[in-house]
Length: 114
Image 1 (cartoon, rainbow, N blue to C red):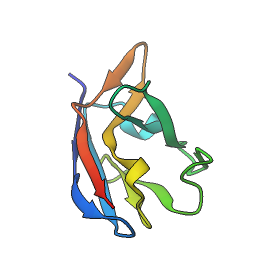
Image 2: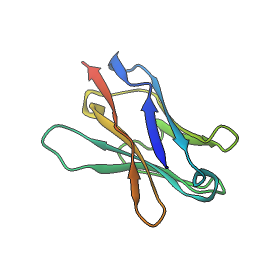
Image 3: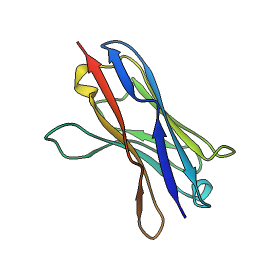
C-alpha cells in the first residue's frame, strides 16, 4: 500500500520561509522521480518542482531561485524548502509520484500574507 503524507504547511508573511515534507510509505520511493505540485483557488494544479532518483532537479519558472526540492532516500521523504515566499505562492501543495498509476498525498495548505 503506497501512501504519501505531506506536512509543514501553514501561514507565513511575505518574505518568509516554510519547509514541506512528504513521507512515502511502500517500496516505490527510491526508484521513482518525486514531484511537488500546487493548486491555488480557482486555478489548475501546476507542477512546482521535481527530483529524479539521481538527484537531478527541475523547477517552474515562478519558483526558480526561491524553492529547493530534495530527497532523503533513507527516510523515504521528499522536501520542498520555500524561501522568499510571495502571496501568489498561496495554494494547497501536493506531492506526487507515478508507478503504474499516479499517487497523490492529501495536500498541505500554504498561505502567504502580504
